[in-house]
Image 1 (cartoon, rainbow over the protein chains, first blue to last red):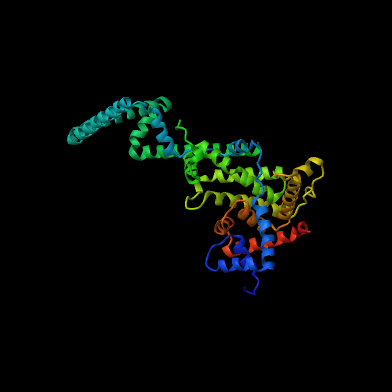
Image 2 (spheres, rainbow over the protein chains, first blue to last red):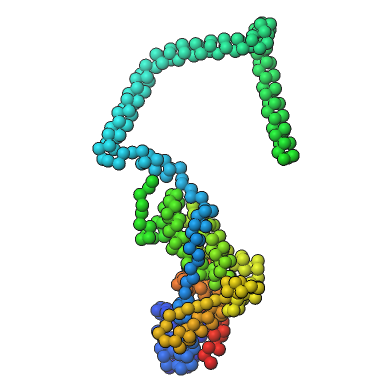
Length: 195
Length: 200
């Protein structure tokens, strides 16, 4: 028998039921040495009592209390997949019909896009015509508005001033709009501070 | 509505993944799995039932609000117990409640407060004498645990009540492995000393 008694960390190895190299001699010593055996048994009683400690149960409302304060966040891609899944028919023939419709729509759009690309000059001409019409309508509407608001004399002045005149008027308008926005913001902040 | 799943048979990592995808049932499954172990740990740390309920609630709220931060290469239970331990230790440090009497907290002033902070351990045994002895040991060990330093208490509870390995405890409590072994060794030694009177 080994005359050295077990060291504290060696007791821990036995309490933890370690099976590594060097543990067997310790176990053998504990069997043969009454003092070490008694100490080991005392320690094992404590460990057993710890392992038999009951688990306590919280109140049954804990889960609801927790969930009332935890927002359940659904990532956007998960929500998108679930929305699409919800809209799809459940039956196999239904899903096949939807797939067919989507394929047809996709093919039509692709064909249309390819046709447009092959007719580039026609597209440019159409865009020019539409653009000219729109530009004319906008200019007419603005002129009509200016005449209504400020009279025909202002329009004549603007037309004489040319681009410089129009630029000056636009800059004046922007300055007035910006000043109004800052003024309104200042008024709102002052009202909030008072409140 | 997503189809119902049998969450009870899924491993923790899968349930957490479902929770990260916004499944409320997965959140509730995690609470159901760990409310008793977490509450037990926190209760034994702070020794007050009402307080333990609040701290357990705080623990789950913190974990579930940040469920997107969980990394699957670590065990979910280790992360959860780490937060539970931190919540309990923070409270103990603020209140400086390291020890407690088996007969209730010294701060308890009403009968209800004494009941809430005292321990009652029931153990099912065959004979009345065995039951008495087991109850005495159970009560004694609960008292003894309450007299350990919080760091020792957390380690010994995670090791022997939650059956965590030394490595898991080190990861949970952010301690070196050697420190965990030292704490557990010292806790066992102190508990043996505190329970010496039972031998006599």
